[in-house]
Amino acid sequence: MRAYERLLKYVKYATTSAEGAESTPSTPGQIELARALVGELRALGYETECSDKCYVYSRIPATPGHEAARCLGLIAHMDTAPDFCGEGVAPRVIENYDGGEVELGCGRVLSPEDFPELREMAGHTLITASGDTLLGADDKAGIAEIMTLLEQLAAEGAPHGPLAVCFTPDEEVGNGVLGFESGRFGADIAYTVDGGPVGELASENFNASSARVSLRGVSVHTGTAKGIMVNAALAAMEFNALLPPLETPRGAGGREGFYHLVSVHGTCESAELRYNLRDFDYAGLKAREATLERAAGLVNERYGEGTVSVSITPGYRNMREKLYPEHAWVVENARRAMRAAGVEPVEQPVRGGTDGALLSWQGLPCPNLGTGGYAFHGPNEHITAEGMDKCVEILRRLVELYA
Image 1: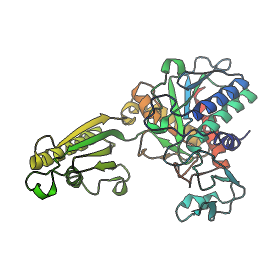
Image 2: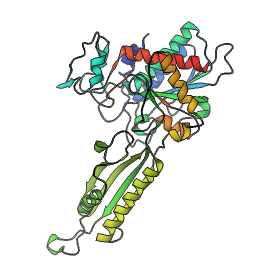
Image 3: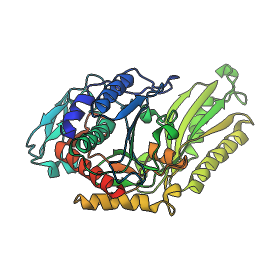
Image 4: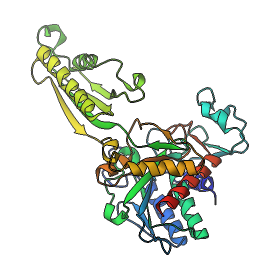
């Protein structure tokens, strides 16, 4: 079975993860997909189990003569992003795509004007959703590619070292490694298969933290408010105006960081701002946190101590600090595998986080590989069957290298 055929099956499972859920996994559809994957892996003859936190672990023993090789791990996540509807996905398969506009439905058009890579997909088999949902290639394409690799290895008896596979829940809401058991996984090094275009190779990502800015006002009758009222909602606006206006997601690219105002809630009596802070340099992230504290100090000077308070929650860290220089060979092996498959690596920093970043900081070196998909987290998501085939080939070359 080709990888795209598996993708068409997997996207029909409603696995959208939920922000703020107290249970793991956060939604029951992830359990359904996990059970299906366990069944497939066992049918291939691989020892497989699903933890009580919905992590699917499978160990593939080395072929004779390759037992001493490092254990290579491959990881992908089962959930889809809560940014857009992931239920009732009806994938569309467009064979011999002409490279032009595609009517998705719901008044939406997938256009090469917006997504120039579509022109290069002419003649390929294009896969999209139907306009009212995302597709779910992030990251069910990664799962499909890993599963197709394992099926090929089982059928052909190709030589390989020991392999470990894990399919994880709730990556999209930042909880993908909370229940991950490295001892149960058993790999020496690993790769997340959770990126974009074919040949994408990520070995660095943002440092991240989040901030909650709480404002306390003084609410009195407007007729007697002079010199007394402190409008918390207005103070919140003043606070935000003290931040660099161009250092937002809209104004930042490449290796530039940003302040992202996620939400605003406020009345005269109280208000709250929530921010995501991002920077590729850890010192830069700490400087952004300090900027928030300085802004709070200025507002407090104007309206009184205690008007504004800032609470910082640490997030993920840049995997580059753990991969280089000690584990640079892990990244180099990915480059070698891609070139062996006829693909030139596309290396660029991830303007976000990955499970691989968190795992790298836990001691498991884990760069991120592309799956062939584009426009994740929304109705324009698309991928090609041929791109997925190439990603499977890259994984095979990687397995060969580690054998």
